[in-house]
Length: 441
Image (cartoon, rainbow, N blue to C red):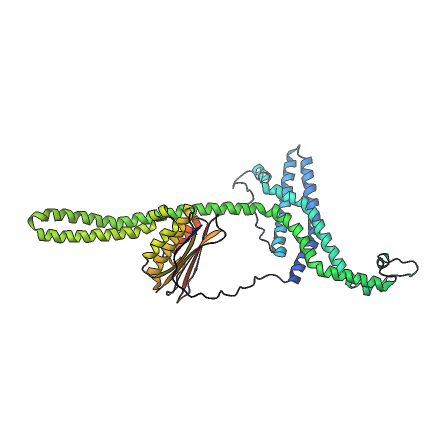
């Protein structure tokens, strides 16, 4: 269920033509896959021998202290093999293949601690597991790629090199004759040519399959922990950003209250006290003082209302995001066209983030853009709420310049969101915020 705000009439524009994604050509992809698959066994065999022999030697010597050091040496050999494979994944397969964070001994640690630290690292054992299992997948990948290349090149060139093979019509039995295509060299040449054509047509698929078989296992064993570590760091950074944004908001609110409404309230108290003393002696001056106090009270209310925009309003808590946005847009000093399509119920942190994105964006439009009109779109996508605020102002906005965009970017980071600002000099300015939302359509 979604709630939609009324939208003023606008003229639709044709969408921009899609730009095709940049992908490697079929031939280039085939050559890269072939090189990766054909060299897999060449690298995997010596790696297997080195790691297995070193590990076996270390286990055999485990009854003495030297055995532990040899096992630690095996982990370093496996780590070097894993690093080489990650380079191959990035260069030949175009995969991210991030390197995980390995455990390291503390600075100043003793020799024994430095030797034992790699043995406590799960990634060290995953590297050694890759050195063992990688041999099996390398055999599959290399053999599959080699067979297809031999079939393609050998089949297409059979008509040339077959003349150098001794042939006796009375004794030789060809493949073509066995399957009933006829006797002699000519049917055999046509059969081999057909095999070569088939191999050439399917060669990109075959070498792609060979490369994927080997690369998939490498990615799981060598880079999955790095991705998990990256996710943990991202969550920690988001949490820290959220705490920092809330602390900055609180400090700014405290400063604004101290410098603005608090000073006005102090003056209002003094004016009321003076008016009370003047009431008996000089009623006219007392009336003037009361008028000034009334003006101070109104200005204080206006300033408090302005400051309250930095705090989630009760309307947002009580009636939801759509109603709160409608009330905010109605108070905008710049005419706003709106399209708001959001679920009736959203997580509080998502509602708050979206509300402040729109609030801060419209505040910047009113203060800095010199825009005549603005447009706000809040829509629900598959996995996020997308907020788009556009204006026809002078442009030149950038988070590095301040204007509240830096704080807004920090607030979005706290909810694992993202802010994009496109604002060339002369305008227009388009601010797009992406707020993750697990319950999207």
